[in-house]
Structure formats: structure tokens, C-alpha cells
Length: 154
Image (cartoon, rainbow, N blue to C red; front, side, top):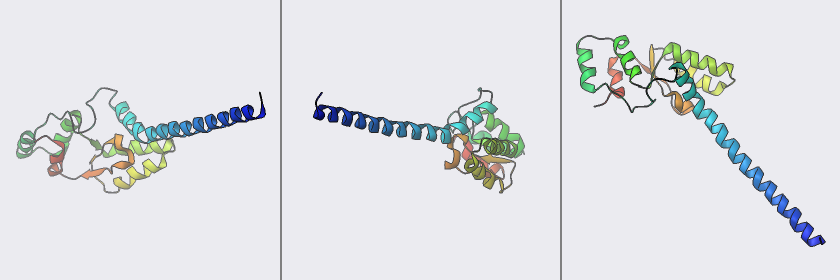
């Protein structure tokens, strides 16, 4: 092999190494993003034992008319929220949100724990929060039955 051919082979190896390094950075960024977004969803699924409706607003069974009827019958937040949670509504209790924050502290995900704990300063029994969103969504206190309108179908 002559000097020129050897130099081209070395350059090819260098280019390949740079290409591989660039791809590894892409893979790392995808894995890190998944840690930020997927882990909260895994936490939620673990609390439901893998059974439960998909998280998000799809799959709701309670209609607005049923919510209005239940409110008219004098049902309280504590009566209505469990049914919405069973339907897969993005509603969580204060205790579950606090446990989630503690789990994140223990796994050194302090940014997410801080995000959730800041929302808990607005004390309520229930919060609207999609765990799969991580820090992209702020837990919102649900103060009364009128706040449940966002969690039912029209």
C-alpha cells in the first residue's frame, strides 16, 4: 500500500469514527428524551398495575350530561373524581402526586420533582396532570366540580 492509499484509509476510518460518534450522540439524545418523557408514564402505569385506560383524554366514558346530573344530585368532587380517574382522565390525587415527586427525588430526577412540588404549593385534593408529559405540563389544582368540565366529553 502506498502512502496515499494508506492516508485515504486512515481518513476513511476517521470519517467513519466521526460518523459513528455523531450517531451515538443522536442515540443518546433519543434515550435521554425518552427518560424525560417515558418514565413518568411508566410510573403511572405501575400505579395502575398495567390495567387502566390509556392516559389522555381519549377513552372517556362520562359525558357532560352525566356530570351535570351528578352535580345536580349533590355529588361532591370526592364522589365524581374516582369515576373520571377510572375512565382514564388525567386526574391524580395530592397523595399520588406527592409520591411521584418523592420517587423522582430518590431517582435523582430533581428537575421533575421540583416541577411537581411547585404545583403542590397550590394545595388541593386533586390535580389535572398527564404524567407522561413530565415537565411539559404543570399539574393544575382541581378546586371544585366546575373544574371537571375539561375532563368529560360533550
